[in-house]
Image (cartoon, rainbow, N blue to C red; front, side, top):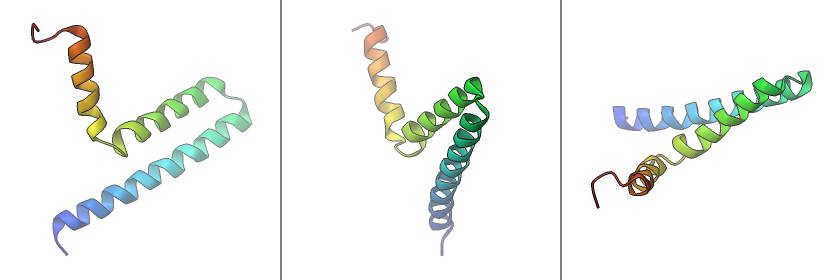
Length: 74
């Protein structure tokens, strides 16, 4: 077993651990009616969903934003 395989396995396990932890926090904050904290948890879930599950989305988002703001003088 190489280090790369170990890293890939660990990255996948951390992703699921973060999902489970944030879902538990979402349930706890909803039960306690801590709405501001619940919004933070939802933002955390969105961040994990967008950037950890599909890391290529960061590049796509950066290219879209660069074109929108006209960086590069085109």
